[in-house]
Image (cartoon, rainbow, N blue to C red; front, side, top):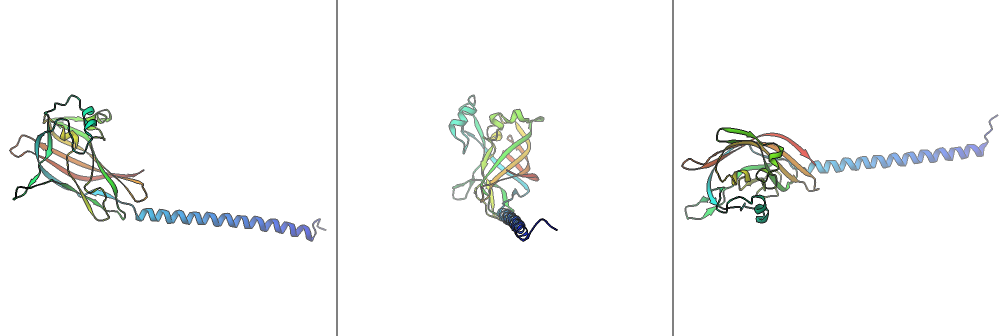
Length: 240
């Protein structure tokens, strides 16, 4: 005969029922958390921006302005420290304002930075990263060491889009040239190949980056000097 009586079987049944109930509670909690994560992921995907310049080129009229160490949109003290040896009367390469028939001037904007995503892009910033530069017919590679120099650094070659907040399907533009062109006061650059890092945040504060190639050509010596910027193919994306 079995050593267990009815009381023992009853106690064992209670223990098994408790274990099964505990497993059920844990499973229920796990499934609930899994469902919550899926809902949160879906919400984030629905609010994710995707920015990119529409491909194409812009021939931009330029003028030479005796701006010394000044750079539009950059803290003057920072620029003073970055370029201590830059002459005070050095000419900057800047976009030429549009002159209307009535004599008024308008800022020249260029590029069509479109939000192809489902959510708004906030605090949008574009960084120009040169990879190769031509001085006349001579080409040199801009390596990591060179990118740490002020003229090519991220800090001085980043700029906000206009506007900085871009709704789905809407567009923004650029309003100035990168510092490595702006401060080419000896007017030697003829061509630049590189990439844009297009950075923004979504409504949850997560950062999104699109990388896109650009080609830039400069002609400072012609009758109407210009810089030609081409927005080219996409290289990749990143989220941090």
